[in-house]
Amino acid sequence: MSAEFSLRSLLSASLLPPSDARILMAHVLEQHYQLPRSALLSRNEMALNPQALTQWKNLESRRMNGEPIAYLVGKRGFHNIELYVAPGVLIPRPETELLVEIGLREVEGLGEAAKVLDLGTGSGAIALAIAHEAPHLAVTATDQSPEALEVAKKNAELLNIASRVQFAQGNWYSALQPDERFDVILSNPPYIASQDERLTQGDLRFEPISALTDHASGLTCLEVIIAGAATRLNSNGLIAVEHGFDQSEAVVAIMKAAGLADIQTHQDLAGHTRVASGRKIGL
Image (cartoon, rainbow, N blue to C red):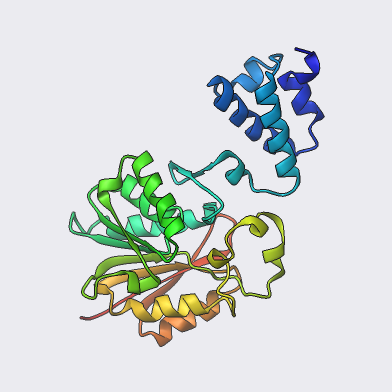
């Protein structure tokens, strides 16, 4: 086949950012040749066969039109695990790993009876990352979307931890049994205000709108989750929620109004105050 279809030539000619192009080409090599990403260098004179070339052109075009890479390759790395992702779920983001770290830190001294709840699990990112790191924990993951739960369950199976995570379908706490209580509640709910222009930009255009915005102020889901925490946490239990970069003061105020104590704010790697946590004191 012509040298114009070699890996080197195709990548050089692509109008995509080089990092995007390499990720997509590595996916093509894995799909059609079972070759590792290193083949981009070690076999850069290799020419793609017609089927692989067609897939490359398709992926390149779709990415040029703005489709997220995670949807195009069907996976995304998140806190030491790799997750299958599809257009019906939010793409896991690095800042959400902060919730995982807070949850793992909290359960360190609680023993094998500790129970963790992930509200609005989406792809299962938070719940599965915690279950992967701490096999002794009892982890429950909920989501209102049956489609999202199917993705989360598939990820649990791919990670061989399906037996250690309980899934429940429903709107926030309504997915749970009335008497269920937890030591840690974690959630990355929809928190973008409905009029925020970011919803019409970048990857967000392709992600499920219900996972991004509450169709209101951006705080209504956070209010429901925080208000219900006291009746769902064990004594001294912790709730931690992700929020927008400019919502910290509002979320802290909601936690104070809900009677939570030891309220703290947490910064992500970019230096944005991204998570607020609070504790239930007393019975």
